Length: 307
Image (cartoon, rainbow, N blue to C red; front, side, top):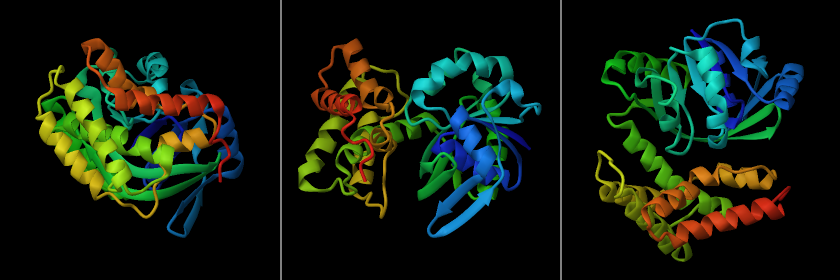
């Protein structure tokens, strides 16, 4: 099959690496990354294993001559809106798999695409860019894949089979937005704290109560939304998951961006909680505090080039 990976960050390149083993893959990325991979290939590392592949990579969708069967949408959350026009112009009526961390992407895509073409995923696979042509996979808890339209279930199964076949552990979700909320809450309550502290153990007495408070605030906000699942039950599931989540290696994306002096996705994580809280007049002091810490470090560059 023909795939276009729209977004050449760490996760987009990781999917590009795996998919290129058995499929025709084209990646759209920023110019510096395009140049590095064209000149030096893409290097993949995991658990002491290293591989190098040639990858078709472009800086513009119009340069890709092959019509894709599937688009993997892998841009950062803050680039979603800017990408919509390009997506609409080049990939109308094409199935799109979304990889973003937050819960905003699908709403944005629904302004452009019929729900039949949108396949959200909740990915818990850790990957980071060592340099512009090297990625390192440090965690592999697979992903859940779903659809927004019951009529899309046959294509959904085909996509899940493809991802499993290339080595990305994929399960079909019965309620993908619930699973995306699970990941969203995990990121807000755990990954942001990991980014700021480097901890891999949120069960620590100094952080357990903070994690709980962040989740409670998300519950208070989300009760103003029309969700088709029990948010309190989900909150408890997420908290239990976090308390038992002790990976050998973990470097959340917000922290990686802070250490590279890049813009983070905090506005689409805890910042999105704050945005909803302002809309519904709900107090969320812990989420506000985490956002303030991240934005301050963005401005000061304090974590930049930290070893």
